[in-house]
Length: 405
Image 1: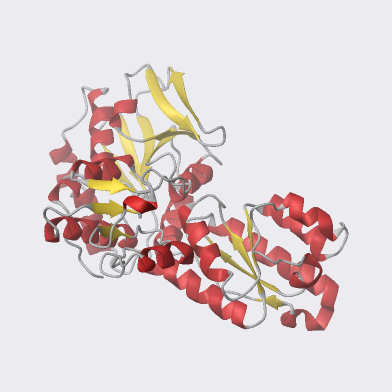
Image 2: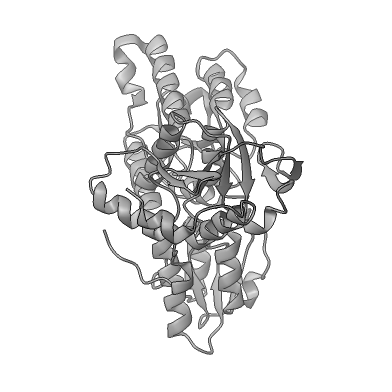
């Protein structure tokens, strides 16, 4: 796989060595058992896969290239490069300005963007409408386009489905930049609709089966269907694609559900009404989720999940781990206040919380430590070091890494 030229301060001294060791011992990535770092009074269980992925490293490399190649020029990002505060703060500190927030609200009016400005397209991609707007201004957007190739793969798949005469159902978060971009590309070829989860899939199925009046569709799915969508016609044939960072098992369940609905309605003719798509999650999302599921086979007291609060792929890791243990979703080491107190993000409630007495009183505390695909391993290093400060009798990092099998 390609090696990216990213800033040295994103390179990890601890986690990086663990990952290199796993590459040597498991080059084909068939062993999904976690790495155990045994410091004595505290043990860390590190999933086989976590942290920066291909698309993120590619985006960071291109962004820093844009900075290096354009001294004195104004450089803009359409929105956050990735959903990680450390990386975005770093880019802003080096002169890059964001045009929009993650939901598309303008920070900088389009009138301020000129043809000789540098505009970077983030890893999530962007909408057809934004592309056309920038092209009309004479802004070059191809040179520093960091759209993840796996996002582009979804666009290609949705195009194939649409040209085959199927309506496109997008499993995703409708306010997320990637989903908005995918929706914009998909409805160029076919009617499209965004659904968030199985509950909304079941709601949509009631319109497919005509159990609810068609007019109600427009209230239930307001803002999430393409212009001209006709539920009486456009729900007769469909296929499912997804935001690349959604929970794989949920996307598969939604796809299986709609296939079953079409089979019940059309019997042997169901293949003409449902495009049996392959999963469109990216490899890194699949690997990270599979590795996190593998951790559930091991005992641990709790998990620390590190990443941006608005990171979709990171939130899925939280969801998986919460099946078995308490999870503290933190953005960085600063949220570990003391051995008595930790600040963390409650993803379902979308709010910060503080938990007291979070470290159990045991001879050996076992902690799952992982991060989202947009989180630098250096931030995970800092979290690990911060926890070790709370266990002063721990072995040294060098000793543990030297004895790593």
